[in-house]
Length: 178
Ligand SMILES: [Ca+2]
Ligand SMILES: [Ca+2]
Image (cartoon, rainbow, N blue to C red; front, side, top):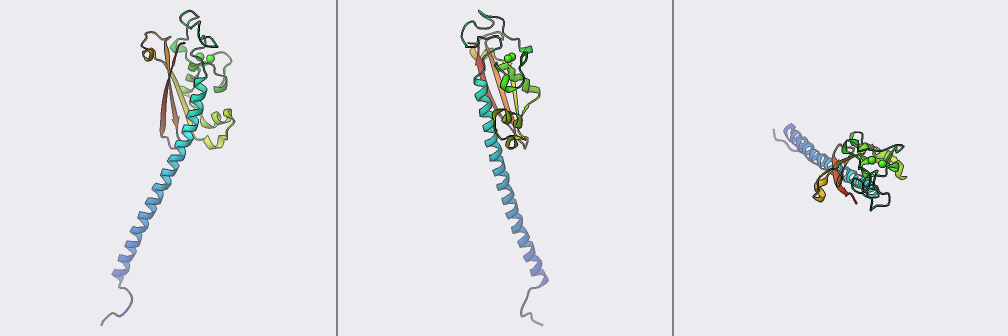
């Protein structure tokens, strides 16, 4: 008996397999595109937070004992002793990024990173946008940056922005004693 119309079972199964394979390709492509777009948004928000932190850090003096207006007397030289690396952190009533006045105060956020929402709130930004980001700031002595010896010559700030997907973006800056 000859077949005149319709599909055989084998043809149907082959068709279903082909459609399933095509759908899988489309779904995978769409998911990769969405993931890429999310990653770009994360990076934009991370750069906003990093930019704001670097902007604030640039306004900070070298050390708690530095001349508030810059210039002489330099701590550890003609002025009082600079803060020892073991004591890097905030002083006295300083409490939070807006109250910090010298670069090593930011070392407070080395072991306990600052949440993106807290930082956004301090800056008057929408905290919900940055809720799952963190800023880790570690300060170390870096005399080699200016070719000197001793701990009073320069400090290094390592800023790491931790994204909601746990990826990290790192920045580094140096402060010399002037
Ligand atoms: Ca301080
Ligand atoms: Ca300090």
